[in-house]
Image (cartoon, rainbow, N blue to C red):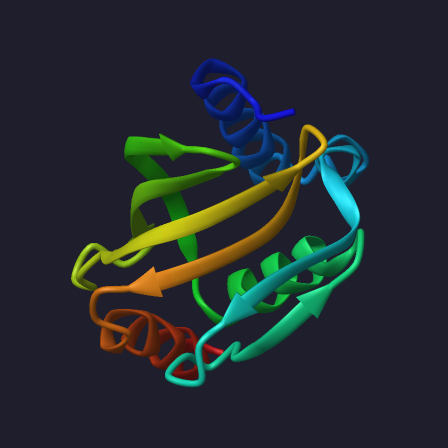
Length: 136
């Protein structure tokens, strides 16, 4: 049975909120056992992050590479068991350009089973990662 657009919006917003707050018990409850998040080869955190802790592993890796201070969702387009979130990733250093991206979500049985981000320009994340590495 497909989720309604309202159910999808609620799940996506709760997932972002709980992951952003580090509440992985709540976040993991919204993921399927075979959940997978993919990051493209063009990014320093490239790979597939699988299972209930996959999102936590990806989050720790990406946030450990760059000083992300905000992930702002400006839009959410919902489909049948899918959604695309339009996001701006802001970094601590205001001199760094924000990263613009879309994240594609897939849902099964009321839970998220896949997230696949698409960065408009991966160079913005690379610059933030390089700035953090230099500061360390």
